[in-house]
Length: 319
Image (cartoon, rainbow, N blue to C red):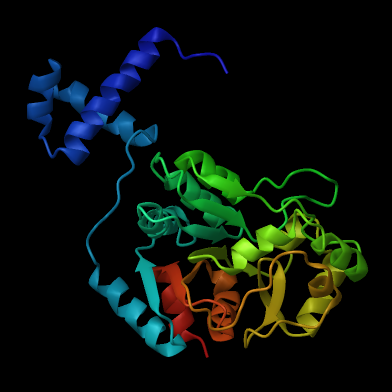
């Protein structure tokens, strides 16, 4: 990609300086104007540009009472180790920006540890957004491990390969899963999982210090359907068996039990462990995911949840 024009580059430099002085150093706009030798109106435009261009990412560090109440109620009701509820945008209650920032902050806690950490990750839109919210870091002591295949049915690489995004952002060693998300047959899956370059990845994933996963819904608006892994007939069949959601493409019912179905016999991703000792963080929100999120919490496969206020209220009002 060609470099931006010199004038644009200098403008972004000024915006970054103004944004840092305002959001990080706590300077007033008048103080910034004096320091940069520009007008107060110019400072306003530069600060706005710093945010809109993504040069500055702002995190709210104030526990909103309603969110705190919801998080405690979900934690107690579903016996989680922790639940974080972030504010919702009334105009777009399913937006994932707040989730992404909270997920990135949780992930950052482990990345900042000096001791080598193995961080296992699923895939999906929410986790990709978390990766994009991470600040640049130098974490060569850590390992980022994928728990799910990164190859689509047509052989193309998955556009939601989170480990590559995270590792590139934080300069950590990473281990992608070079497998199709679903194998053609259960027998083919057995053969692939026995390959010598695959076994070490599963071993690392099973011993992860922390795991981050998304929660997917089922239906014609689900990732499995939109990405072409299932058709309408498959969706109807999964519904008839009580399916409500998936994690790492393993389909489960309302009680969080893995369904005995063809799709689960062919999925190549690592099977999660019930009541894990180490943190397993699920990041998900949205009305269409309520049943899936509740099933994930009942399953005992996750012990932490990050969601938003809108979704939390729907969860607590559900049976």
